[in-house]
Image 1 (cartoon, helix red, strand yellow):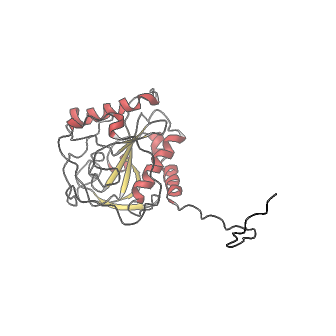
Image 2: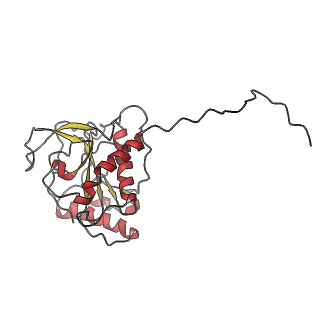
Image 3: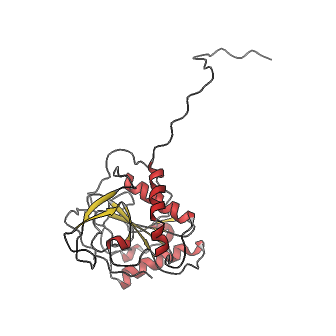
Length: 251
């Protein structure tokens, strides 16, 4: 199980109360992907003791892997997500699962941390950069396995939709301020990161595995395409009869 140390469930300086964190005005640029709810994968909500904390917005998304087995069937994915949840709560002592989203090798997207997938919930995923970021973790070890097309496309769709809520181009970069000394950056250090970054970009870890990390340029490209507006419908090229309500002759 991937167990890198991350920040405790404490709000950063720009965090706000439960009523804060409304998405930016306007429709998101990318279509919302299908997401398996916490109820559907069987989250034990009695283990979550405190309400979620919200930050001001979402500026970037970190890609992770769980570092668990790759030898699972997709029918077993919900049980794996439950295992990650229990590990984060019982072993790490966190209030909830750390990741905002999880994706299995069939491309199924699972809701992670509670609080609303369309809201900037403070997560516990990249120590020093939990504030104003989101996260998606792929089930499996991608230092060993390669990610398939379904994984890459689902991660890209999640990123495009989530960042699109704030009018953000998923192919770009942003400057984030490290919230803690984490072994890679010092607290207060300004760091330029891709809007879609790997865990290792913000924290000293091999996560999300070399194979998945090498896929990030393609994932950014896919996310950029998902965020593009749909092509407008073509104008008809043939003659158009306006307001012709004359009934057709009987045959």
